[in-house]
Image 1 (cartoon, rainbow, N blue to C red):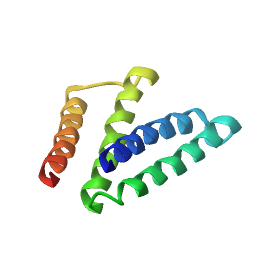
Image 2: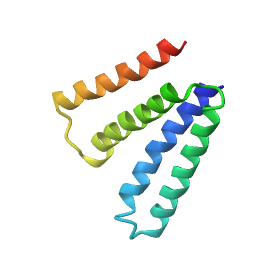
Image 3: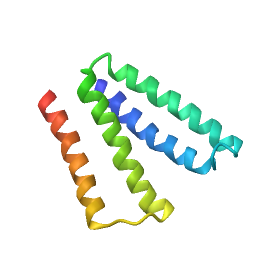
Image 4: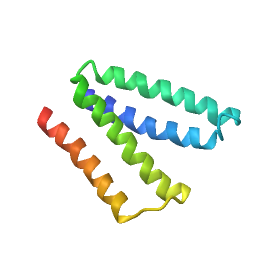
Length: 105
């Protein structure tokens, strides 16, 4: 159950980043409000996950999901560059995230 909350929290974190990008430095009301609400929802879901999971791995996995998701969203939806170095870094984050999950059991 905790892992589902954690996955949902990470996915909502990606939505938060998209909303903040669209908020244009908090000058657009709707994306700004969505950004704040998704941030609160992500933290709530993380807190739910922490009822079942240890803090260290759960927090690292949450940020890993958000980090990789936001980088990929930037590439596919906002035209950000994808280089070999960025791919290698994404792979390391994924590897570390999967490793933490496997070590926890």
